[in-house]
Image (cartoon, rainbow, N blue to C red; front, side):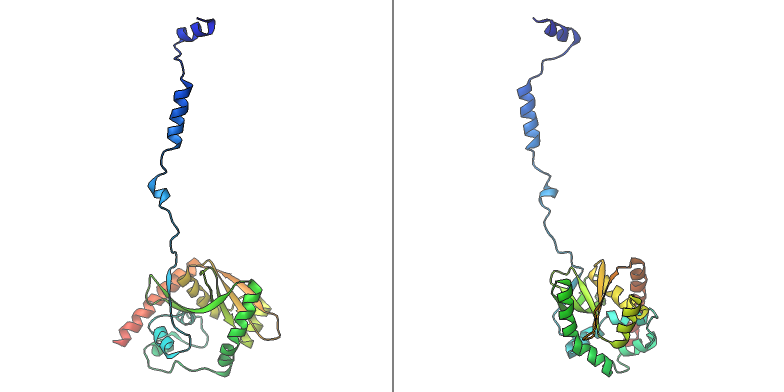
Amino acid sequence: MSILETIKKLLGFKPVNIRKLNRRATRKSMRKVPRHINSVRPRSTKSYTIVNLKQGTKEWLEWRGQGIGASDAPTIMGENPWKTAAYLLQEKCGETNTNFKNRAMERGIELEPEARKSYETKVGIRVNPACLQSAKHEWLRASVDGLAADGSAVVEIKCGESIYRKASTSRTVPDYYYGQLQHILAVTHLTSIDFYCYLPGLPEVHLCIPRDDRYIKRLLDAEYLFWQKILKNRK
């Protein structure tokens, strides 16, 4: 017995079987990954359904009337200088005409396809108009001007001269459109929305508006109460 082995024996060291250790380590590394890790697969994270309707049609108007849309949001929040919540309630209950369009509104609708192509060229993604309905709140709806095929981006397009002047000068979204944008973000659960102002022959105004969760909380509370008023008045 060598001096080293004698010392190990006196100190109580046990011989180490390297092969056994290697086999043990190999078995440990080959254990199955926990089932919950193996079963992780891509899932649909969409918080809404896409309703197969063409915006502007009679069917779309009927669907829109059965819920709260993005353009209703500023009025409900008291941020629309042209319409009161009381008047919107009358519209939703069928007590007044909801199909009125002035010339500026008609021109905006006419320019929208051209503006959408301009936006697609600028950002490099293709978007299409879509009618969205929240999976959580059946009454929560949005008719968006452009939604990416994978739902990763959404755009609100404006083609009016007045909004173009305001947005191009201030580089911000006017208060009376803020609720509309946040409503869309509430439906889509996205973190931002593009605000795109377009007039032929002029530089485009492209603003990226972030999600405002505090505002959205107040907005959804107000919209829910307003929807309850609509249901009550329709009875």
